[in-house]
Image (cartoon, rainbow, N blue to C red; front, side):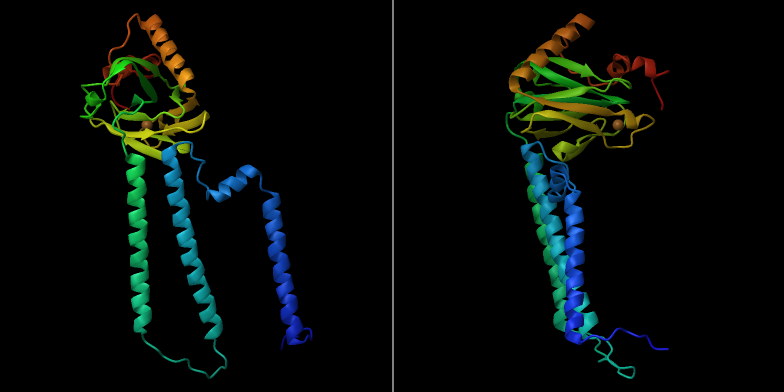
Length: 315
Ligand SMILES: [Cu+2]
């Protein structure tokens, strides 16, 4: 039984198919755009990357967008070639046998060389951006010692004179500031990391127990916190506001509680915050800390942590 198609001149049939296709595309585009707030339009432009709030994060975003654009151009060329081959070399009659070409040397050289060139460009761009986001300035405005401990964060802000040279060995026995003001989070008390806008802050990452990972989506960077090793990176926040941070390494039973907030404030508010924090440390412990709280024995006796651990070991 043959299929009965409505009779229509070939030219008119093509024109009406084109109109239907155009209408469907426009309709779909309108539906998609109508559902777009300016926020989600931003997400589309950033290709689902969070909005960066640091100078360093802008380079990461540009790398992400560039990689997607390169991948999409490649995709369009490949899809286009597939569609062209399917149409141009389709079987035109039942007894037709296509040319049995076994290889095409120029084509094979092209699809060997093109991907190698793409990998080289991706690699070079990645190294370039990696150098930018991991670059450490000779004298950052602030150095914060971050402790990731089971199961929260302690943020140690420096007070008094700073000696950047003391930070250079990246060891845990010398620290750049004369004294420290610290905020220790607990299982039930999510700590807030306060940072000054427009200033460069270096994070030195310490862990007394297992591997954690310090990350803030709005920084577009995260870094492992490894016991016995001090990893570090710097950010220069450009936007004031409150942002979310968390542990990105499945570190144990209460990994999911290793959350923190980041509050970017003006430089004056930051100085006032650190002074207040030092006062409240002094009021609660009776001493001004000369060294940052880096966990280990200290982490177990921090406010709130003692109650969450029975023997202090294991888990
Ligand atoms: Cu963790």
